[in-house]
Image 1 (cartoon, one colour):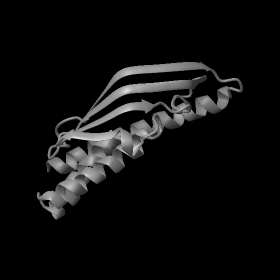
Image 2 (spheres, rainbow, N blue to C red):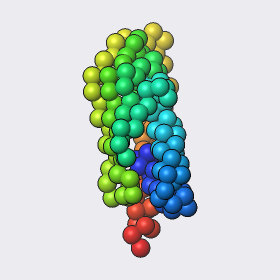
Image 3 (cartoon, rainbow, N blue to C red):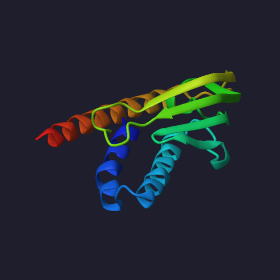
Length: 151
């Protein structure tokens, strides 16, 4: 939801100003890369060398390492020992972020995980409650934005 809302805002504000020429496309490409980095960097090591744009509205990340802290956000007593995503495909509905979803497809996901030795159950429960509250707020904000956009 966060990625979709951010990209919709980028689509409306910046692409309109930049125009539809090469400069506008280059600016949108960089903004999309920045947004993907912001969203995905909690889970993977986002390296510019793995970032490819095979077509307008498509992003491809190949052979990407999974972060050791990828599961922390979910409050699970699991730590990633090693992990790799063979290919991550992102399809962006350029020009129509409000009505179509951003699609992320993972191919060849391999993760070796193990238990966290010093797992703090109370902290994990607190983090899960915070994540749930954040998700609810994000969904409510998206609903309000959709209502305002439709008027």
